[in-house]
Image 1 (cartoon, helix red, strand yellow):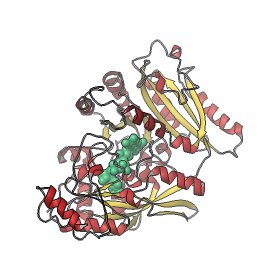
Image 2: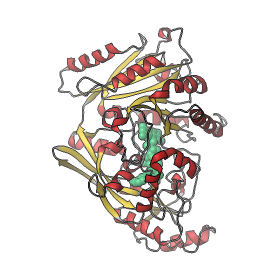
Image 3: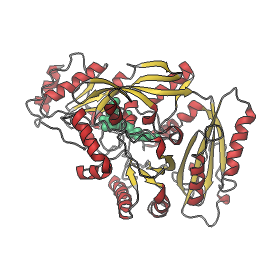
Image 4: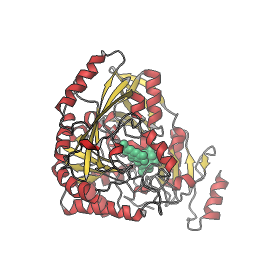
Length: 508
Ligand code: FAD
C-alpha cells in the first residue's frame, strides 16, 4: 500500500513535495482508484487527489487525518456521495476519504426519555436509513431532503432541507449527538452538553470542523400513506399567502410537507404545464383553466397529509378538504394522488431514472440554491422568475417558505434575518452542449441573479454556498464570521479539512 502511494507521489505527480509522507496510514486501507474523487454531480470542476482512501472504522478516519497533519501541506476531504456542485468534496493532491465505505459501520435503534433515535454512519445514504428504519422498526426520521441518495454527513454539513423543514427544521435540527473526527485526528462524541461547541460548529459547518462518523437522528412513527396534493396559482401574491398559511398550521389539522415550484406558462415539456401532474398517465393539465391575465410563469403549491392504514378513511378526507377549501388556487387546476410514504420520499428516484436515460444526469449541473427573505420575495419574483427565468431552467425551480425559529442559530449555517424566508433552487437538467446551451452561460445567469440580489439590497444567503475569495466568505457569514474563524482555529488549526470549500488555506 505504501509502495503504491510512493509510486503515485514520486512517479506520477511531479508537483508533490517530498514530505508527502503518509506512511502512518494503516496497511489495511483500501486505496480506491482516484478517478471518482476528482468528479462530482456538478460536473464543472475536477481536482485530482493524491489518494482516495476507503475507511471502514472511525479509527481509520482519525489515522488518515493524523497522517495528513504530520505533513506540511496535505489536506483531507470527506466525500459523501459526491453530490456537490462546485468541487466541495475534492482535495487537490490531498486525501479523499470515501465515507460510504463505512456506511454500515453504525446502525442502532435507541430510546431516550421515550423518544426513538437511530445511530447511523456519517457515510450512510439517507435512502438506506429510511428503508431500514421503516422496514425494521416502523419508524422514520422526521426531516428530509427531496433526493435521498445523499449521505448523512454530507447533508448535515450543509443543513438538509425539504418540505418537512417548516415543522421540524432542517436535518441539522433533528440530530442530538455526533461522533466527529476533528482536524487534529481526535475522535470526539459531542452533543448539546458534551463538547457542545464542536457539535454546534459541525452542524451546517461545511465539513470545516470535523468529519462526522456517526449521527444520532431523531425518529417518529412512520406513516403508511400520504395524500399528495398540487394546486396551481397564476398570481405570486396568492401563492405565497397560501404557502405561508400552510406552514403556520399545527400537526393536528395541518399538512406534513409543504413545497412549491415555479413553471413556465406554456406547453414546454421540461419547463411547462406537463411538469405539474404527479401521475401523467391519469392526470392532464388543461390549460383552458389558466386565466387569460396570467404572466409568463405560474406557481404550483404542493403539500401532503400523512395517514395510517388504521386511520378512519374519512379523517384524511376531512382534514385535506378543509385545507384545500381555504386555498385560493385556480379552479380546475388541482391534482391529487395517494401513494405509500416510502414511494413519496423516494419520488425523485423516478426523475433520476429519466434524467439518466436522457443524458442530463451526467451532464454539468450549474445549480443555484439560495435562501431569500420574505421581505423581498415579491421583488425577487418580479425580477428573477418573471424576467430572467421566464423560459425556465430545464428543471425544477423550487420556491417555498421556511420558518427561521426552526433553525438553531448556534449551528454554523447562516440564513436571512426574517422569521419567514424562502428556499429558491434552480435545479437545471440541461443536455450537454452542443445540444444544450454552454454551461458557462448558465453559470453567468446564476451570477447575474446573485448580483441583482446584491444590487437591489435583497436580504438573502446562498445555500450550499460557493465563493472564490475569503472576502466573499466573510460577507456570507457577516457577524458570524469571527465565530466561524475561532471555531476553525480550535478544531482544525492547520486547516486540513474540506479544502474544496475554499474558505481557508492549509497552514504549513
Ligand atoms: P458531498 O458532496 O460528498 O460533500 C459535501 C460537503 O460535505 C463536502 O465539503 C464534504 O467534504 C463534506 N462532507 C461529506 N461527508 C462528510 C462527513 N461525513 N463529515 C463531514 N463533512 C462531510 N440538499 C438539500 O438540502 N435538500 C434537497 O432536497 C437536496 N436535493 C438534492 C438533489 C440532488 C439531485 C443533488 C445532487 C443534491 C441535492 N441537495 C439537496 C444538496 C445536497 O444536500 C448536498 O449536495 C450535499 O452536500 C450532498 O451530500 P453528499 O453526501 O453527496 O456530500
